[in-house]
Length: 614
Image 1 (cartoon, one colour):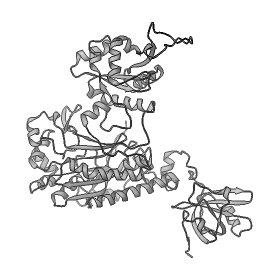
Image 2 (image 1 turned 30 degrees about the horizontal axis):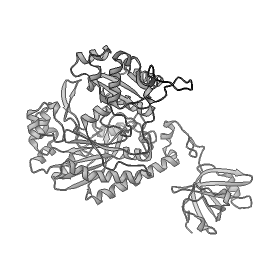
Image 3 (image 1 turned 180 degrees about the vertical axis):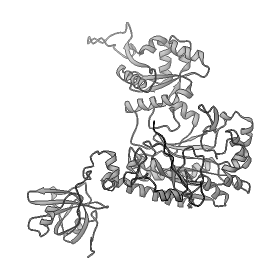
Image 4 (image 1 turned 90 degrees about the horizontal axis):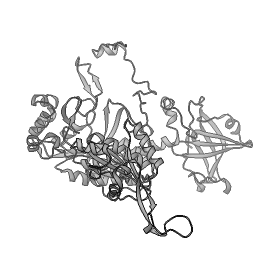
């Protein structure tokens, strides 16, 4: 028999009753039932119940073991009695009567519990991540992650893609975040950068004559952490294709992503055909370019009902600014003053002056025939009318109030909230209000995955801080209209062949059809303040490549961490990552970042200049 085990802790079944077996694993917990000791033994694969009775030579050792000790157990497989079967365990019909127990490794008192998985301070969990990873939920999440990545690889291969690796030490790139810089020992005063993405390399792969590239690529960005983005590094399914248009990418990628979601969704419905939603439409309807389509609320422009109305605040906004609009956020079932007041208070907490609202309710029509029971209610439906309530309804009058209700398809018991001004300035807040209302009213169907393509992003955007035009997204995307658009259109009106794939309110992928023409590349960068010499200097490799026959190409990159987070139902990326940093970008387990020794700094030609504290 093997030194440590003949079976895993998830393997034994009723058909194994009578067999002598050997298991090794961690003591999950110990229970004393009137002299009999029950040990739940755990390994990577599962759990098996061990029984030690006082007559067994293993009993003395069994009395000494504690949680998370590593032990070896020899014993006989026996069937559990009907009343003790654990239907929640694959091994729940059997137990091992221990004949011999060997302690392979004792554990000190635990700094955090493994059994039961109670909430625990994050700094403790990260410092002792090796214990945290033993917890069932986190352990399952990490295993699920590996299976999801393996499935992605298989599907990419079936779709004709080949995996190629790109360099980790590279040059700085304009991806929009700070680079991690690596000083060069051999080249004094010069630095490598860790790749924010393999963007330029994968385009060079296309220019080099390879056709369908993919990679499970590590990416590094020195940016502030948040729930859906870890500090430091993340992984993406990176891909690129030659001789394709935007629709070709969609037709290739959509079945791959749908298949991944369907396989790991646990039976939850997945969008069958991903809708294509233009960026401008997404902002107008949902107030965000990554809408959660499980939320049925769709915003609408209701300016016409407030223009020259009795509600002077909105009327004056519309009259004083040609860009101004009034947007409505309909809220089915939200028709109570208490809910409307809560939404108004929330808006004030978000730094807004408030959130105007109307809610509708049924009232009996004056003079209608009443029920004979003395209740005071009208006899039939014709005796009722739906009327608006709240300050806005009183100011604009019943006719306009009913016109708003009719446009939005609202009924008795519904409400509507309003935001006013320049949509570019209030769209994000309106989107947040839409999300808040949908969640508060339980309108969001949480048991499904809704995916969609967001298309036609602006190629440029206005940088208010620097009073200049910047790239809206990826600077290497082809502008719609090409060179003609760059030379003849208002830059802020140009759209890009840029697209995102969104799911349940998260951007899970971003991509585009690339610019492969050097004159278009130069003209595009000129608009944001780069001249030809700067383009050649900063992006010389790609620019030179475009001089020697570049195929039309495009692709995308899917965020593996976010996809896994969605599929396992985690709320934070640290719950699907083996060894993440904390919110301060520190690795508490390994003690990174750490100080360099004087010798290391000398080798790198670096002298530290401490920042003076006030």
